[in-house]
Length: 194
Image (cartoon, rainbow, N blue to C red; front, side, top):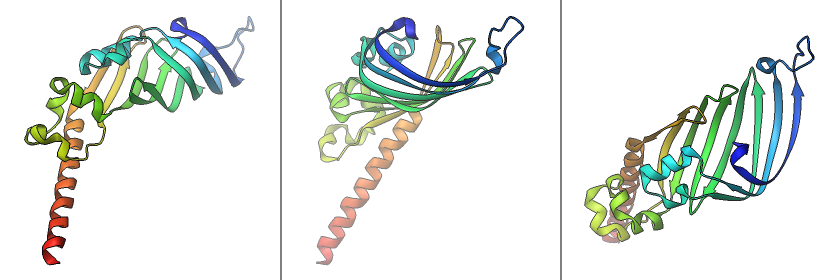
């Protein structure tokens, strides 16, 4: 990943490992805890992010990413780099990720992508499949929250496989509407009682 990052970073690492006969570290038995601090970094296109951008028609994911400040804590156990949850601002959206990568470049990250209302009302054609049809013509009458997409990034760093769970996005939108309709009905009941 650092091949595609231009900027500044610092890191604090506590490392423990066996040494081989030639005193090189045994990479499959490294135990490590660390913090990676990125600031003023530009990241050229990451395949996983451009794939998300293509699937959801989000331009910000297809452009180089500028990171003002990002703190990531991680650990290495048995050759696996486990990354604690962190949030990555991409344009006006936010991508929360947690998972691991292995020394053989295999990756597994689970994420939650939040897309603000502004983006999916501007790009109605791209996002209306996730919003219940009955409200499309009346979208402003509801207090819409961000659209949230559960996603999984697997495969390898070089050839990532991105799976987006659209069903959970639709279910969240439906629950959002149900709770608001219930709230409006309850409000009307109170007015009628009075």
